[in-house]
Amino acid sequence: MSSEYLWYIPNQVGAGHRGDVVSDDHNSLDTLTTQATALEKHGWKGALLGAGWGRPDTFTVATALAARTTTFEPLVAIRPGYWRPANFATAAATLDHLSGGRLRVNIVSGKDDLAAYGAEVEDQAQRYGRTREFMQLVRQLWTRENVTYRGEHYRVTDSTAVPRITPRGDRSHPTLYFGGASEAAERVAAAEADVQLFWGEPLDGVRARIERLRALSEEIGREHAPLEFGLRVTTFVRDTTEQAWSEAEAKVARMAEGRTPPQQHADHWTAVGQKRLLDLAARGDVLDENLYTAPGRFGGGGAGTTWLVGSPEDVAASLRKYRDLGITHFVLSDTPYLPEIERQGNQLLPLLDSE
Image (cartoon, rainbow, N blue to C red; front, side, top):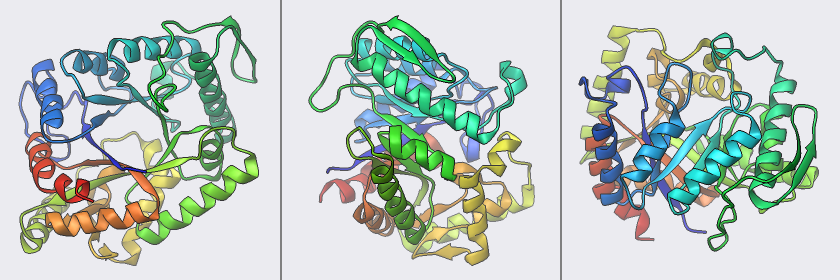
C-alpha cells in the first residue's frame, strides 16, 4: 500500500503557535489559503485542521480552503457529542460533494472544555461508547439509505444523509481517522476506525501497538476493511545533521527559558497517549536514532512533544522505518509552517516518494 503525506494547519486564534511567525493576519483566509496552495504545489496530500473550544470552527475553515484549492484534502478534526451524527453526516457529505471527494475526518474523543460546550461530564466508558456509536451511525448514514439505528447514545429513524456520497474507486466515504492510546480507545479503533493515528513514539512502542490493534480487530470481529495506521509527529529538518541538532537544541533551550504553561486544556495532559509521550523523557533525550524527547519537558504537547530531528536523509530514513512497521498515513509539521511546507516538500518528500 502506498503512503500518504499530510501537513498541519494550526487553525488558532492566537498567533505564534509553536514558534510560527507572529502576524496580525496569521489566521486570515488569505494566509491559510497561502498555506493550502503551498501544500498543493510542494507535493503534500492535504493537512490536518485541529479542533477545540477557543479555536476557529474546523468545518468552516475546511470549506473555505476547499473552495480556494483544487487538490488539497482537509483532514477535519471533530468531536462526537458536540455534533449530532445525522447533522454531521449531512455536513460532511455536503463538503465532500462540493470538494469533489476531498474530505477526510479525524474523530477526537478526548475531553475539551465541557462546560463551555454545554456538554455533560462523562466517564471514559460513556465517552468511548458514544464515540463508537457515532462512528457506526455516521458510516451507515453515508453508505445506506433509510437508516434506523437504536443505540444507548443515539437514535435515528428512516434517516438518509444527502447529498449521497459518490464512491471513488475503493473510497466509499470520507476516511475516518481516530486517535487514543487507552484500552477503551483502542477497542473503538479496532472496531470502527479506518486509520488509527499514533503520536511520535519510538519504533518499539508503535510496533507493539500495531500488533495489539491487529489482534483486537480479530478478537472483536471487525466488519470493515483492515485497519490502517498513521503517524502524527514533528519533523525538524535542516540541510545537515549537525545543523538540525544545533538548531533543535537551541529551540528547546529557548522553550526552557520561557517555561510557559501548556496552551492545551488540562485534560489533554492526563490523556493516556500524551502521558506515554511525556514518560519517554525518562528513557533519554534521544531515542532510536533521532527521536528527540526533550521538547516535552518544556511545554511541547501533542505532536510537539517529540521531534524527529536531522537532515532530509536522516528523517526520511526514520519515516521509512515507521513505514516498514505498517504506517501508511503521515501527518508531519514544523514551524514556521509556510517555510517548512516548502522546505520539507522540496527536500524530504522526494526521498520518500522515490521508493
